[in-house]
Length: 353
Image 1 (tube, rainbow, N blue to C red):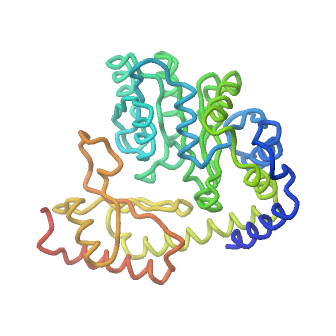
Image 2 (image 1 turned 60 degrees about the horizontal axis):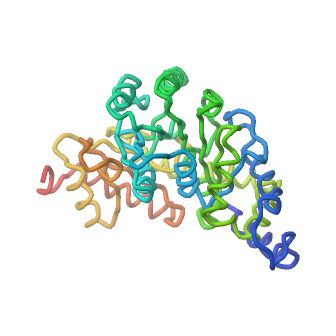
């Protein structure tokens, strides 16, 4: 949608005259312009006041989650609470840090507060709640403000930090984020991967104001800082006037793919939002997710079963998540959706296996 051409042009400009030079270690001072550009890019995001000193630049959203864990976790066996279906990166980052992951029951509005309170009572080592309230992956759900306020109350009662992963949101936020609702314990992670490009591995973590120094130290102790050509590029890209219309075109493009999926599969239990780059299909009675995935792959379509988003012991629904990949043409995507429609209308002998 134009971002590749813009990035190529800005990379050439940075290469010709890099503001940070080419012979210096990254530094917090040297990356100030990139952090200021990130503040500009995040404008309008309802996560409370954000200044450049609050921003810890990261190598994408996954690294932002890891940095947050590294800043918060303490003790020999810390516990992290996650939604029973959640972004797998929450668990993978926890494994790296040898933290225990405890799933918490959820409904269509997200984490169930009473279940969270019970888990916190059972696991006093619990330190973080990880959640995706604006765009829940994989279900495409949303956590309304009243539920967020109830979760904050539980977090305060049990002294839990709250990490909000906002990497999948492409449109405007619908409610205040946890950093705004609970400034003393709200953390925020995001990246450019879904809205601009995943190639740059550029994201950020933001914590409570009084924890920003510790968050920056986690980044600096891990990798000193992002490469200076990358921070120079970020400073130019995130504040560039052409970026906003490019992102708008990206949202429109995703909307066309979603529309195509709905046209093909809308008669089934399909969960979707026009500005979210995936859809969630709850399978008809008789289908097991694993069997459906195998049958779909024989027809040249790869989808992800619900169990990929759950811990090993969790009871998962028979459902699949289908990502919208810009590397697949709209024509090919439409053909894939029609093949899935045919599979659902005419299940093979694999059904229920």
